[in-house]
View 1: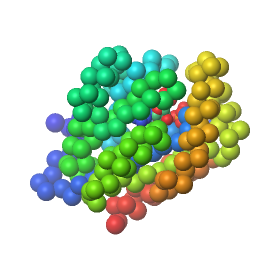
View 2: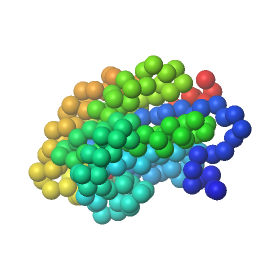
View 3: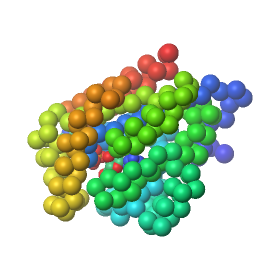
View 4: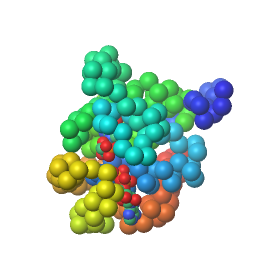
Length: 204
Ligand code: ADP
Ligand code: 5GP
């Protein structure tokens, strides 16, 4: 089995750390993580399930597992999601087992989820010092720049974009709940800050 296909093998690994990255839609989370993935192969990025239809460029099993609302309800009812939330009209959730298995195998894991999900993960794992997640907020340089990026991406109708910008106001207000804020002025600089945060946790 290759290391990339599943949790890395070790006799008695110390558990990995759990990182949660949140931030308003359009701030650049996917862009920053795509770059981070190329320079930090040891970090396992969780793949969420969603009922949102695929966007151009989305890849099944890489960006998301795209499922029907019925399948999503089954997964949630069966306790298979570590957290889940509705965001701008679609459901999103984190498959529980893969996350816990990678952490137990000593691998650092990153969840890219919305603020509601970040709160759930924080609360669900509050009792475990080992699993306490490191919460990171990716912030835009300004609200105007966020709106520019969302419009520039051009993947949403005006109505859905408006719902996302509305949600962004609430998400921006949640920033103080996070352990760290990274401002995404520039992708390379944001990636470097994330690398530093991951390395810093490893030294603890
Ligand atoms: P999210 O995943 O947070 O919704 P995306 O990664 O899709 O956001 O980025 C939204 C848009 O902003 C994309 O068009 C992307 O190319 C652009 N973008 C991302 N980071 C930056 C940046 N630092 N400066 C300028 N544009 C950016
Ligand atoms: P998008 O549709 O742009 O890919 O994602 C919309 C929002 O859903 C983003 O804020 C993203 O972080 C969030 N999201 C993606 N996966 C999950 C998940 O598994 N759980 C939660 N709570 N939010 C998620």
